[in-house]
Length: 119
Image (cartoon, rainbow, N blue to C red; front, side):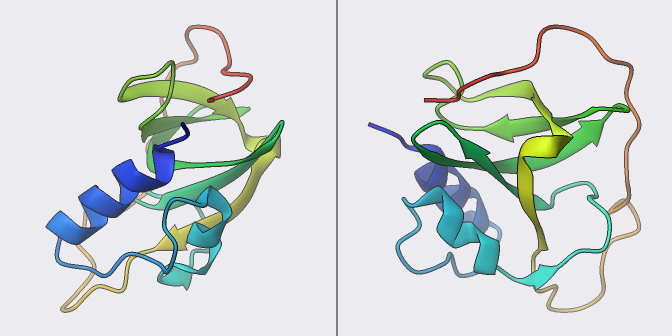
């Protein structure tokens, strides 16, 4: 069973925000918060994949991929590299006060294989 959306819903709820309606459907996260002009630390990233979608949290990037903290990545919570070309939405949580200063793009060195299918 795909559970990437459940993982993101748990993180979002524990951070004090409301998850999207039907959070188990990864592509529903494309409506969370507000659209972000550039992916930054903690943003919700939504991806296409064979058979559906995938959702996770931005932790960094290299030239061609995002490093994504998510659930159901190799049937575990992990950080994987996913091609930027698969990303269909970058969403930022609706900060209640001010956006923290560390919400910024994070450049990382490429390493490891790209994830092809997070199911």
